[in-house]
Amino acid sequence: MENHLTWSEFEKVEMRIGTIVEVNDFPEARKPAYQLHIDFGAEIGQRKSSAQITKRYTKEDLLGKQIVAVVNFPKKQIGNFMSECLVLGSVGIDNDIVLLTSDLKVENGLRIG
Image 1: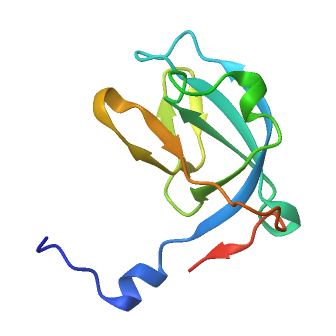
Image 2: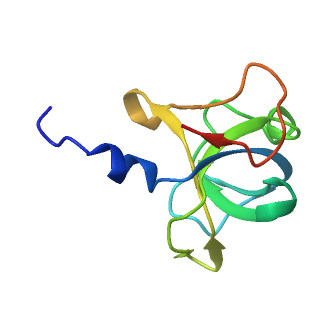
Image 3: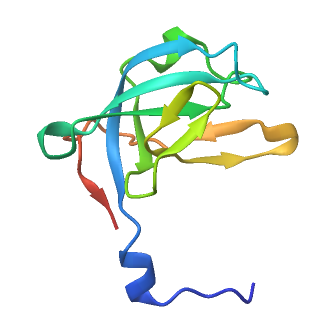
């Protein structure tokens, strides 16, 4: 791997813990996806994201789950939906995504570093 980041570049990426508080189907998406509403605590508030995670997760599995997301990317229009953060996960064969989560319940909005 030759594309190395400097420490100062890495520090610019704001990865935060948030709790999924609402999950909706996203039938307008080109690939199967959910629309997520994620609570990042008082400082950041709620953000929306589109996530192609329907292969491994049901809507019921996702409600209340704490996940890791990047909150300082620009907003991105996906169909008729505005995505406001990037939910992180490991990508396997055929985009079989496993979400990055916290194994213990922590305060929403905590920074990953």
